Length: 98
Image (tube, rainbow, N blue to C red):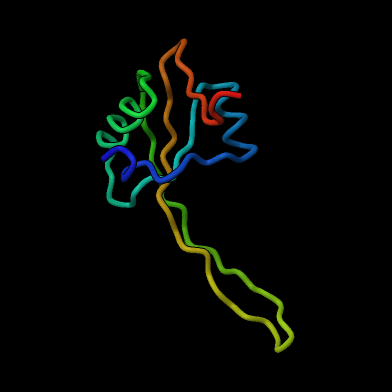
């Protein structure tokens, strides 16, 4: 169940800065998942204590692609993002054992 709610972790420059400075981690989550389900899924998968969960829906974006016949227009679909704040002393290892 937890794997269905948490689609994947978001690894960007901004999310890395948040995890280093504020102990916050970003995940792409199922679009119908609520904050309580997300909190339970993170606690179950990573065995950590979650302090808070903030969710937001990232809007769709238009994308253009150049081809020989001209410009093809498409869009990048929207998704739901969750920013998880962990309690002090807790960390998540997103990269596995290195």
